[in-house]
Length: 132
Image 1 (cartoon, rainbow, N blue to C red):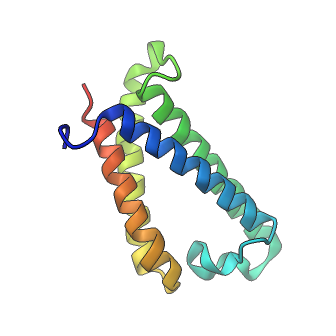
Image 2 (image 1 turned 90 degrees about the vertical axis):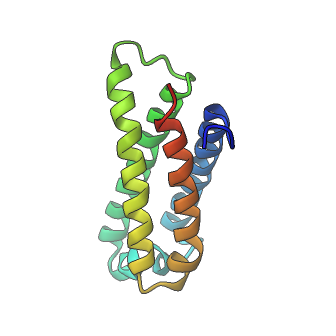
Image 3 (image 1 turned 120 degrees about the vertical axis):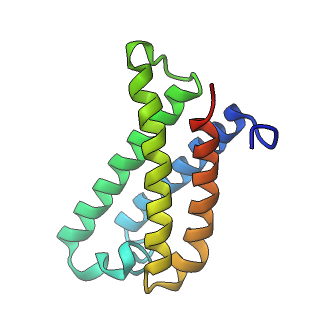
C-alpha cells in the first residue's frame, strides 16, 4: 500500500473529502439536501434530532480533520503525537464501521454511493496509520 500512494497524498485527499463532507452536512442543516438520505433516513423525523445529529456529525468531522492534519504535519502534534497515532487508528475503525452502517441502511444513496466512498477513505486513513 505504501508504494501505491504517499501518506501526504492520502492525508490531503482525506482532508479535502472531510471539507466536502462538512459542506454536505451544512447543506443538510439548511434543507438544501434532503435529510432523508442521511442517518439511515431517520434524521428527518424532527427538527431537534436533525440539528443534534448534524452538529455531532460536524464535530466528529472536525475532530477527524484535526487528527489527520496533525498526522501529516500541518498541525504540530508535539507531546500529543501518541494521541494522534492512536486517533488515526480510531479514524480507520470509525470509517469502517460507518461503511458497514451505510451498507445496512435502507437508504440506497447510503448503500450505493456513501459506502464505497467511505471504504476508499478508510483505506487512505489506513495508509496514514501505517506511516512511520
